[in-house]
Length: 327
Image 1 (spheres, rainbow, N blue to C red):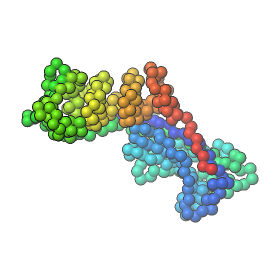
Image 2 (image 1 turned 180 degrees about the vertical axis):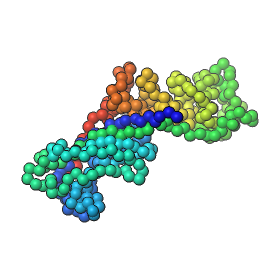
Image 3 (image 1 turned 135 degrees about the vertical axis):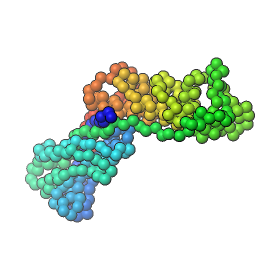
Image 4 (image 1 turned 60 degrees about the vertical axis):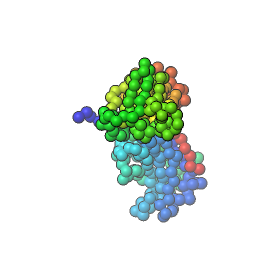
């Protein structure tokens, strides 16, 4: 059994809070009042977000007289995220270190930052010009897992007779299929079969702009993902184009997830440029996470100058410290 591969993503946020205008309102509250920072995305493909929460007078009765600070995670499609992080107020030399595994049961974890009155003594080290600056720095680790492809479970049907429709491709090669399968997967084919078009009457359609191999693999995907083994990047692009032309979502999904699961530094630029060109959101998110991890680990990505500059800039933003204010 191969060892688990953990992907690391940086998190960094500086939060400016006006002590007199905001914090002061809640420092003696017994209603478990709290306020939160802006949310930021750490892992795009699984939609993991993070933010800080400050409870001026504790989040429960036994914590009254204490100001608590938490890091909260929204796990998206993840079930487990390992977090190693520091929350600090550098002006007061206050540093809190955490190493915590987030799950569905406990989306937030933190500690006592200070006492509420610590902010309102003369020359309080916690304040700079009346503002509290809280900084978060750390990493999130998630298990590298291939996105699961849903299974139609009709692979046995592909080998059965009683096929009632023919696709004619280049060089007059023919692919026999079941109308019902195509109609279920493609609104375009469904409309064709219900119409008075000659394709419906003849139970045949000519598709001369795609090769036999591409059309056959795309059609097999309508039956079961298991019917298609490895594909090249070039095949993936062509299969996606077929799925896009005939509005076959299962085909588009397969290509996005397959290419996203097989990213390497050598094929990254070709795949990400394809994903951007067709606005394939799942694939773009996978590529974004891949590029962030490469930047974070200082791994060279060949031909990166050929990638859309806005995409690269968005990835670089995830390495920088975000800044938000509660005034």
